[in-house]
Length: 498
Ligand SMILES: [Zn+2]
Image (tube, rainbow, N blue to C red; front, side, top):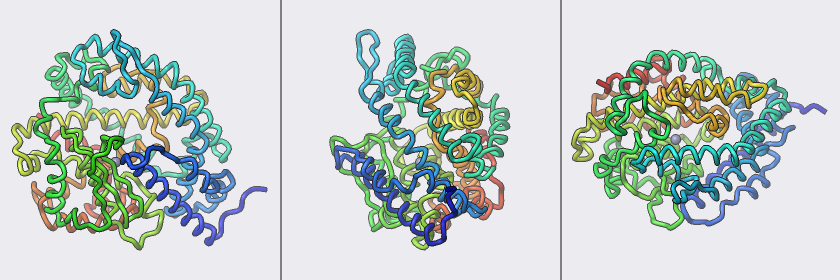
């Protein structure tokens, strides 16, 4: 019997259970990665809430999608859970392999997951090439068979839900501003920033790696962005005070926020990278970190600080969808707004005794351009990938699209692993535009030092109160009157690059 659409009451029950499911996942994630619990027990949580993502349930909610954003978000959540269930074994096995495999170069054994930092810290180019080649062999031989099977399972899953493919399903789950219209903007962005990127990347490659952009290879990229000379400018012991001071300038007393837990304790198994767990929105948001110092660590703390303040200020009165689901370009946008303070010269000089902040800002802008171009090409690729009959034919296309955007030959073997589920790539892309446009607005309204203006803080808190109720496009329109536009990122970068 075909499923019937759910009644309002059934939808409410579903909402409440989904709310508990997400809270339990966030709590487990927090406990494990904060080093408070050795095991990472997701299976019992998924078992307990199995009914949320069963085929009939997902199809039934699909029948209730009627143009309103809330039910559509609920259905998108159900679909993501359904695909997650189908590929959980694959994901677990890939994670296990990644954790146990290693590569050997010149007699040195390097764990697979340490390859990227090893590339960043290896000054010898030949050793980097060797390391990259070995790591790609491991990916191709061990992980890719699982990745390929997972991709096929997802394709079949989309057909079982009644769609021609995964892309068609997402054309119903997301507005066109998040997919096809955005792809149009990305094509334009890749075109309009091509010369700018070539010049900036060439300069940075020459300065950091000693090669031109045309000589640069993919194993030089992690080295390019690992600039140890800046490390001492970003000391570990000043990270948290800098976040506290920044928030205080905006009118927020981090230490006295009762719904924010700062987990700063040292524990042997604690994740070295900062993260935010919005366990209850807005009543229990945890910001976890272990200060190491260096620009990367500062960026991560401020990024997660942005998520934390967004969820901590979200209005209690919103619905589950508006608090926990919705357009992630919004929460990523708030995270980017705070993250990018750490390469803002006016902020750096005020917060740290920072020598050469403009030089540092140029590197930041070059990095931003690299990543946005990479994601723009990734969106174009993922749109083609998720409509392909036979995904193995997409390997060459992956290399073509990404290499063309970056002017560096990428690894074709990465064509399956370099895909974020649910077109999350769209959230990041739009969050960069959201940040660029909102920052321009804040500068115009509150001055270059907007981040130290009380009224800017008042506006931010008001907008954070909206949680995830509006899409990034809607919020930007309401606040600034303008349309979300990737070209704003190009303008932001041009402001800094000589
Ligand atoms: Zn984020």
